[in-house]
Image 1 (tube, one colour):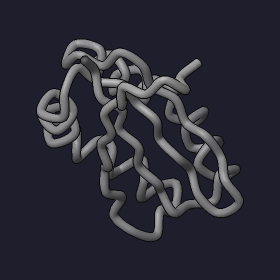
Image 2: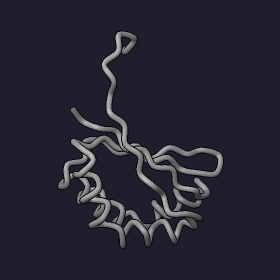
Image 3: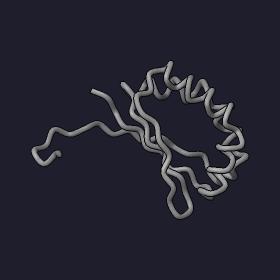
Length: 101
């Protein structure tokens, strides 16, 4: 069963979005590397003063291997976007409950 990874980036969402647009080739390269490492789903969400990364991966180890191997590229994008702290990935597994829909 896959896991969900969530990570909050303390950054202005508008600036983050613009940096992503301005660096499309680099972002596309990172996305391709994530797919090759096993990523199932990836999406960004804007909050008031932060961006939430939501990924689905086969397991925590697959994500961590990707994250460590692309740290320089991701770090450069985050720095350019004005991230104010080092984001920390958090992992969740689905619970088997009767209220799921």
